[in-house]
Image (tube, rainbow, N blue to C red):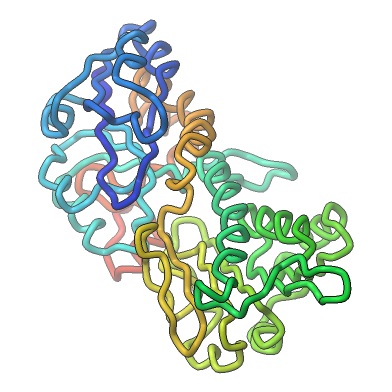
Length: 370
């Protein structure tokens, strides 16, 4: 199979979808790998690194998309890439279709096979499904959420002027985390390490019992309901939105009117923004212009947070994705889907047919029955 890796063109995106070692693994098994010139530079990998591992360097994105049978990316195809997609071409990346109807319609129209990292499942402890290709980026985004929130609580950033950890004689900052999954746990771990008072809200009682066992004493778990959320908005200096419904649009747990309950200069970091955001007032921002203020509350809603730590996140992502890329190149998506129901969940679109029910609901589209 011919595998293509174009440069990421989303604003402030520096990751690359394949490392030189991944190129070597593919070429050893007889596959051809095309890398767009400069694709790895933002993550610290030169064209020469890829060539030494067996890749061919292609001067343009058009050249990669035109030749490759499978495109491997990090972020969803951007509008300028949509015309380059070919019927039957396999595209393996983060799509987050539920947050973007135009992207969904474009992929349906171009009749690609859209395989989404974020909906690929594997069995986890107790038989519960896990999302192995989303987990490493969720860990990074959660850790960064607290780091960025702490920064924007500083007064020059329009924040309250709060040091999350406090100092002797001064109370620490207060962090409210909505969602106790991978993102929420990572965010809480960093926040409590800084010395903040932390509350994690979730609706999964088993998950909260687990978090109570592993988290330090300055972390409290609370059941998440509309009354409890509203009650604690005024308590929080930093609110971290870490809600995930796999493949679906995130629910609005904080409404626009609720911002009036928050302190002037408090900060919201909405990590759920890739799936539409769990705060009604959230809208996607970039690393170049990461924040905006509504009702005196600072909103940080960068849609590709891990892109800022591109070397770390590239390595973490490709550790998880490379074995699947090799499997796809060897066997093709449909053969794997027949044997592996968890992988089948990753195929959101198959040559003009929408297969993901949460995406269909989000955009009022018809789902194909297979």
